[in-house]
Length: 221
Image 1 (cartoon, rainbow, N blue to C red):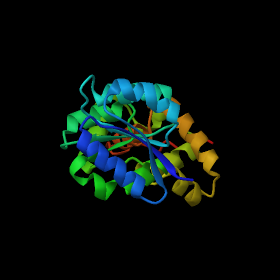
Image 2 (image 1 turned 120 degrees about the vertical axis):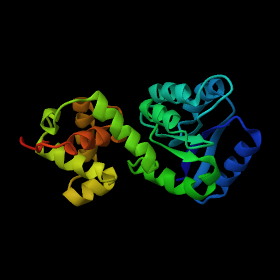
Image 3 (image 1 turned 90 degrees about the vertical axis):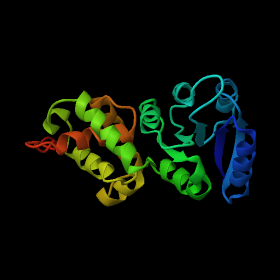
């Protein structure tokens, strides 16, 4: 079956090009292409896409706000932000809202399909600059030591691999676990760390383990 993509982009020309590119790619189909946040919130949930591509700047409200609302309606559907420039602060706000990654529009056609595959595998495509901002945020917002994370030994093993960039499927293979078992552990990690995404979980973990004197979190079964 084709991977279903929903698109939110107010530039009509770029929207048509992107829609055609997706439909021409084997195994992918654009099931919804909207020009505003209002249209997106109204139309996209009905199409049940696998991935949403979201322009970070929209005419009626920000793509960040639209992404947050769509995440409430479609909590399991990853959102990739599209932006015209690497505005680190703006992209970071999008990641905080629940987006899984972002693409620069000038590189979209080269990077799009790998990025879609990455988010569907549990990854989060972003540049090192954005990743550093996420780590810095959790370093400032979450004082303490790694041992304060209260993770089980297995959760710690999984989070270590996630922080190294492995997808959930890759984590399952490396630890000889079922994919759904890894997903269940990740949900428990989200609850304990009070984050909403793999990016946030990995960033908080890294912000603590990189501090002097941090101790291993995996001290319980």
